[in-house]
Length: 305
Image (tube, rainbow, N blue to C red):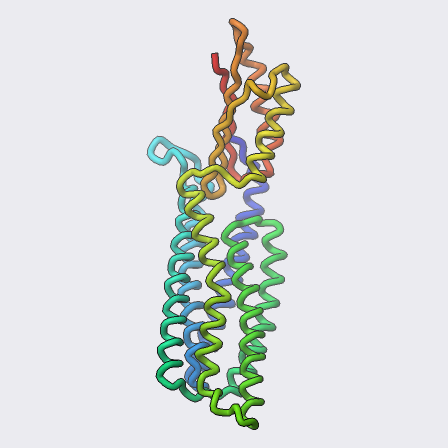
């Protein structure tokens, strides 16, 4: 296993900073959203606050778990704590899917029951302000993640981007509701909150679904994406050729879980003797070439007689 320790320290600090920023921003939004929901009678804002509360709780758990990800393997834990990250992705995706479906069902039920009045002006000003703040957090976290290159932060960044787009969209919708009060369509104002909740829920649903799919792929040691697999094979073929081995002599086992990538390369040997130093040289060269593919890397080059 080859781990660039200094690089990992920088990544860990950047990741911790990004998660801390996300937690603090979420905490501030929770308090404000609860106040706005109370004074405006908007269930859309209330459920958004509950969304943020769940997210903050999960982020606090993830900050604790991040410390364990780079712990070395042991007999008791042959993969270390690498499975914590995909488990976190699955758990977070599942919780957010459940909340989103609950939002849709609740909104549809209220819509069919005749809706309710909402103080649209309060919600409009809040959502526009929330969109601007979310956009600022998105850009700051994206800058931080250039150093961290963290899947957890990447998911947070996507969610802040969705939050910003959702807030601006909701703000625009409530602006239409304000303008509708002076028209024959004023009776629709009772249904705006539910319609917006359903649209917002359907808009955000693909993100937790993709997070769950990615988590399950890593958790069950499935092969990484085609891009990583293609890179692993092309580099191996090139290095093996430099040492006199043809491409059809190589077989691969490649698996990824969280931030750890396992690459086992089996080279069929036809000669009666094996030069172990050649295999060590191939392994060292491939470790150097693969270092950008994962934070924690295990490369084995094995002769098959």
